Length: 331
Ligand SMILES: Cc1cc2nc3c(=O)[nH]c(=O)nc-3n(C[C@H](O)[C@H](O)[C@H](O)COP(=O)(O)OP(=O)(O)OC[C@H]3O[C@@H](n4cnc5c(N)ncnc54)[C@H](O)[C@@H]3O)c2cc1C
Image 1 (tube, rainbow, N blue to C red):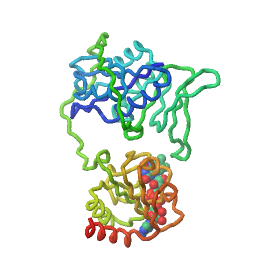
Image 2 (image 1 turned 180 degrees about the vertical axis):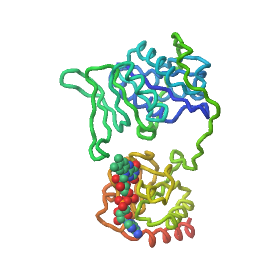
Image 3 (image 1 turned 45 degrees about the vertical axis):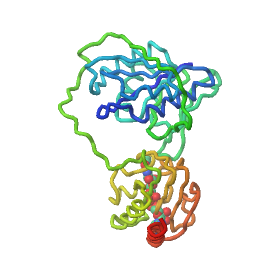
Image 4 (image 1 turned 60 degrees about the vertical axis):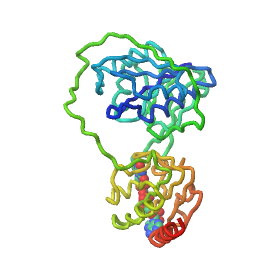
């Protein structure tokens, strides 16, 4: 068995997107029982600066197509080159990050290869199919997140999926695969270069969930943008990042890039404090893998308590000031 993982470079930093190492490790764990191979596939002007990290996350070799014309994202060219690469290595599975780039290129490659693509998977595993032997089972929320659908591609190869950043776990201990990089040669047609980048204006986000050990998240129950400041104060004393439910974002209490859940970010901090969040399935999809969850909600039957390790039933406007006072005084 063989898996291919699309190596995604952040054009602004020159480094890999975090989702690449997450997918590399996932592919490694999928391939390990079959002694299968994980191939990182990349097309660009230069490999990401930190590409050798991939060998520590279970990649066996990198296939690299080098061309200065691919200094910026060129979807049409990438479609042709990555399709040739996939045809060359014939993997059973191909994984892309569900990033803007992955969502752009993966469907193009899948349609060139005439195979299926399951977007935004939350779980991937290999199991027996009644007629087709071992295949990839691709799980993702469907129907507004109310069910988890398991999708298969039994008749076509490769089986392709995209996964959002933060969904797949990283290992405690990495591996030490030897560095093996092969250059891939293919014909290149200048007609494939369709975009000209005049200027890149980076989107500056103040939110960095990835680096946060603690997240204090607020929902509709916080009540107003003014009261959301209470959460910001709690986050400040804890050295935490502030998150929000979609309802809190829709009400204008918090910015869109603070949204956590199925259509927001997926987070896994050491501590997640959910304040005035009911715990809808769509919200839980983004936070229930947090190591410890504390929920503050005035409704003792709120679904958030089903995933919380500790629950405080009460009014957050009374509880949070006490927490802030205690933390400030006691440290
Ligand atoms: C396709 C789709 C995608 C979605 N994606 C997301 C997503 O990514 N993220 C997301 O969060 N949601 C998402 N949603 C919306 C989701 O279904 C819920 O509507 C949303 O999560 C509810 O947010 P909430 O818990 O803040 O609000 P509510 O459900 O209104 O809950 C508010 C809670 O606050 C409590 N409360 C009220 N006042 C206080 C107080 N003073 N003190 C303590 N507790 C109090 C209440 O008891 C209640 O439990 C999605 C929905 C759909 C259909």
